[in-house]
Length: 326
Image 1 (cartoon, helix red, strand yellow):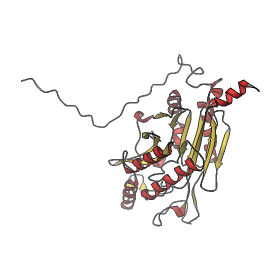
Image 2 (image 1 turned 135 degrees about the vertical axis):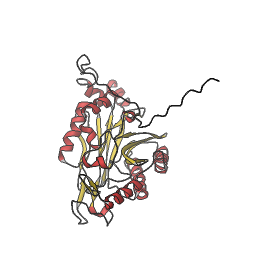
Image 3 (image 1 turned 180 degrees about the vertical axis):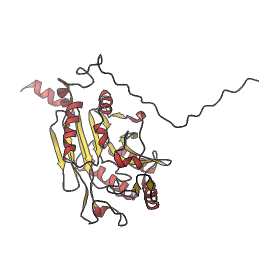
Image 4 (image 1 turned 120 degrees about the horizontal axis):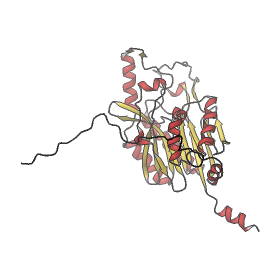
């Protein structure tokens, strides 16, 4: 008997991760919440997942193909009303939807990363919510909304570059095109992300190259969860630019799991909804970092240094004057 191999097998560190590809109901957050519960439970029970990732904006919805009545220099009354509906469908953090998902991950004893649209006053933020066996653990706000997203969502700041230590691996999230921001990636690599969660709605083939690049560059597992959304999942009274036929695909999926050496372990998933679950060998992280560690032995701090401001940026800062002595 090879005792060395037997000992190695006994000490093998693994985690089963699942990415969920599904449509997120638009303007119907109660239904989206029920759907999120069902999908997380299915991934945990049927697929034995210990980490579950849901797509971008799953709670609150991603309004693919809607223009909100915007032209340069003008907003229409109909567009303002559409934004009101979108604002009403967003969630508060903390809030009842967060409480429901926190109770679910406590019950199941798992970690989950859930895409959502957060409402804070008159501003919405695209966020990734982190949950674990202890409940709600924090969020990451998307730093830079892309293109027309900028008239829907505000910008996050450096205070929510959240990384969660599960006890076996470190979870971080880059939402959709944040994954194209090299300085953001560098900041997250420096936090030691092992499981890079990428909630997205980018269904292009080029997205697959980005996910494989990040896995190789960060020497981390990449878990990308995308929506698969058809026209018939949207309310009847909205008109997406892609067309109004019920079967028109608005977001075409492409969820994928990639190893730290850039190998595709599952996916990309196309043509419909589904769950990809993979058992990850966490020792592959060390094997991959043997010859490349982007913020460790392969870095050159004598030449390049990144300054990251993780302070909370508030528009109004209240200062209370010291009371005068009598």
